[in-house]
Image 1: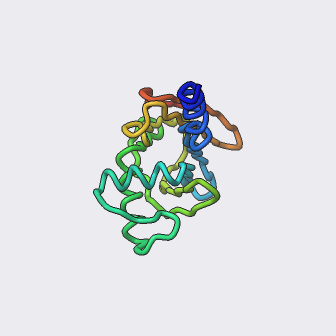
Image 2: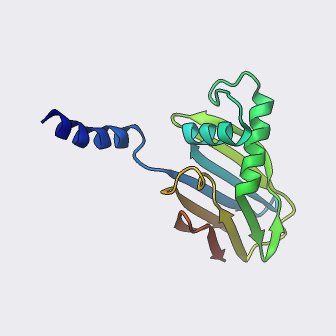
Length: 162
């Protein structure tokens, strides 16, 4: 009886600890500034664990002893796992920083010098290596028109037309 109870309770307890693997990426085109403003909401523990594994280091993402080093790791990681194209042209997001809100790390990026936007393409495989069930909600807002899609590991590509 005890073994059956443990077999049933362990998965329930594990799912309560971290029930799903989901990030949210929002890309907003700022017409007056001609910029793409990007925010990525990633569970902070998942991001921290991925960075520790990739860079073979230890740190606390919530209270880092060396914030510039953590920023550098996040910038490099996101740069490898999030690619953006506007109207077929690859763009390089500039990492601005992150802040922690509840259980999430909000990472902010910006792409300047985007004169207009008709088509937006993304490749996002953030945390795919770490979590086979990782999913991403992606929102694109251009001229106050919002489009959204969801991609699930192993799918990495999303596209929007405006």
